[in-house]
Length: 354
Image 1 (cartoon, rainbow, N blue to C red):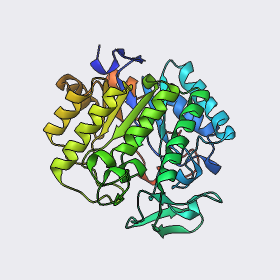
Image 2 (cartoon, rainbow, N blue to C red; image 1 turned 180 degrees about the horizontal axis):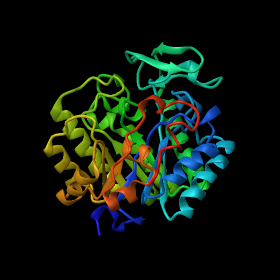
Image 3 (cartoon, helix red, strand yellow; image 1 turned 60 degrees about the vertical axis):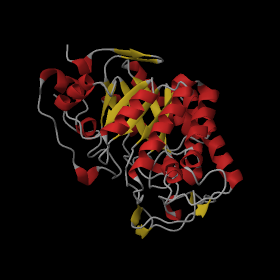
């Protein structure tokens, strides 16, 4: 049997294969509510042993993009149940990715009463799409007060509890792509002088606290984290390579103490081998590797020893039956980049299957 398609068991994870569907923002959640179209989309892709959902807001302030779902209201929590039921019916597991966009957002994308917040008041350069006003420049966020940082941690804990109520097998904290967690990690964006900023230990404190509190609330085996070392997505300035290395070695070591289900490493920049080695050495749980893998390179990646599982994004987006194509060696569909974030079924649930 192909290694990718063999069952996987480690710690709390018991999966029918080694395939993970990576989290991908698809912007189909009208009024920030999961819907039948989304349930159909995830149901189509249950060839994955583990599905990680698109980034989902733990609070109104976290809804930086147009049409992304939330998990902070009763209505949203209830609406997600159609998704989890569909995935479980096919024997797959599903984790909800919790994504607080922080400064990457715009008031036009936020509901009434919500605010654009960040680790500090430094705004991102560039523009963001809004359905109401088209492309708009990123505004300066409000810097979270010390007490507000504690409140954001509580929002994540409540969202994690809602996710379990909605039937999810766990949650993944989005600590990559320049969103709030990574804004705290980056010394050029986090210029705080309180206990949430300064040294790498203080900048890592927010991520560690969110994970610890969620693990205490729903169980460590139901918590994962996505990181992307050395990434500059979301207008994150690069910083000293050795400090980046030490930051992620520290995070791996501290999160290992919490005994969480997995670390999910997204490769969006060149990661030195020593950083891979430090993460693997310091973290004993499951490691998922993502970004740019093909069925051929994914199998080799598993055999290389860093990763326990491999995640596919665009390949699952365009190939609902990816596991069948891997099994038969069939050609893969290519994604339609024009419909990644448009409303409706086109480029979402209409990709051909074998």
